[in-house]
Image (tube, rainbow, N blue to C red; front, side, top):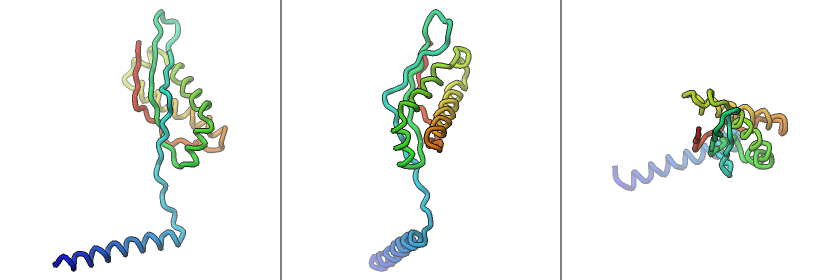
Length: 140
């Protein structure tokens, strides 16, 4: 094939793909929204465990995966509520629970469930698909 023939084929492929996208939009086919990530700043720092002579600390950086820009806006407008629930989950951990190999995942799931429930009560929808730790440090 010559270079001009390749260009014609590539142009035809590009035009057919572009036309299918236009027709899909005209027919009202929903395009799946891409997830958005919302970084919660500043970092979370909480003490945990009770009755110990020495305080134990958790420091975590958290990013939320949200389904849309509208959900991100809802979370930002309710950020004190979201931060409160995360701090409460972090500080409610016991020394025994934090010594387990699964402690980070357990805390992640508990924090996710807590903020989803709080946002559901506040906004009518959970708003958050996932909670991700971008850093997680425990000092005992």
